[in-house]
Length: 546
Image (cartoon, rainbow, N blue to C red; front, side, top):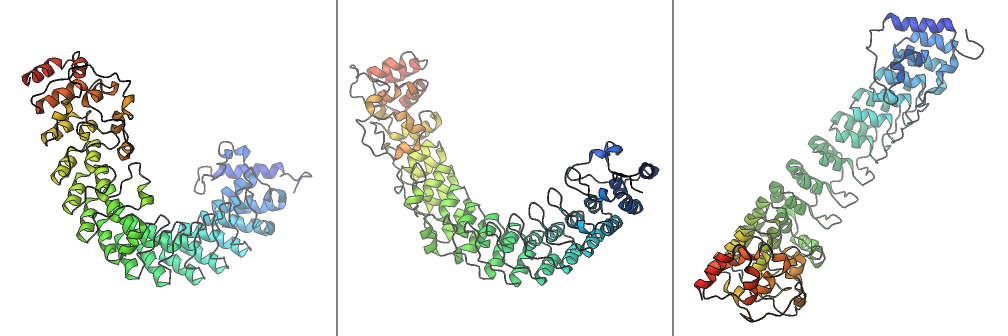
């Protein structure tokens, strides 16, 4: 019996609540709603009677309500759900049958998220509900907002029975989600060979590229799915397809360190000489990430001409990223220790570096520096003197190695020529390193050769008369590449009396005096140092040589 306004009679409504209260401790079918998390769980009065019946699996009441209040079957909640969606979500197959008998036209009704009852059933892995809906005419190709179809969702859930059932009802096997993935992409990602085989038998394309031109084979490589990769190769997948940025499956495997996959790809004639859009080869990326075993596999199959054409060698990347074992392998297999960056790549660095040696110095890797020097690294190929770079980075071990291999300890800074060794300029805030240089024979005496001696010195205005503030060289490596001629050479007393050195002049001069003989402090040094706490020691040491 239905009232004139289509509502449920009070007697039937009371019956529903009585049935609910008979077994209110049974929560076997209770789940959290994925969208609204129904406020009805806090107040039973807020839940539609038919939804109560569905949640309890009460098909008899659903049948009664289908007759007594047919409009309740198509009444939507705020998320666009009708009772059929609820039945699908809670896995109530008998309720679905009752609803389909009363409202067969609602089988493909969508929620606000464009979910059908079939998709909800698949998501919940309710096989019997999936079967009921398909038999009732549900369209297996309707996708939700993110374009995932029931078949795609079944593959994601790795439910073989549901995949088989959906395919038997003619689902489109190559439909794509909003990322461009097909069901095969998802099955490969899960490394589920049984589902992969079912999809391929149903007509799945082996090489479908997604939005970024990533094929199932590349997905297998990225996820380290060896069995899926073997399967796809057997089925004829193209091992040399490239993504939108030019990466091949071999490049991806080399980057991620999947040695077994690299071996498998190489055994199937994968081309190791396909560059990415940045010009890098698989060998480059394996060297950068330090995968030395993969580097050993790739060296024999990588074209040296292609490496040169890239404008950067794997040795550069190994040195830049402190990959000592890779460096050793590359040198042992004949890599050019003096390979230089292309002009375009060199210009990306403020210091315009060009050699692997310089990369190693900038990275502070003294072990790599040692290997490169022993292999014959040239010290004169970079715009910035390698010794100055090592001093600038404060690495005493690297400085020592460079000096042992012929670096000029008394070289000058091109942008800021001085009357004393340029290396001293770069380590004035690092006394241990300065001492190391002095121990190695750096010309400390030159710091005390002043053109003005005990006479008056020209006035200076924050070093502006020099043209370049030499103290900036300790903070900006790009200044070391400057070839602009300076107005004049800077004397030590001019530098040490600049404002930037106010906290260092005493300790520096005190240390320098330990390495000189027959020295007399000029008028400016005497003036600047006279108020420093080191002055007694400095005066005593300088007087010893007068």
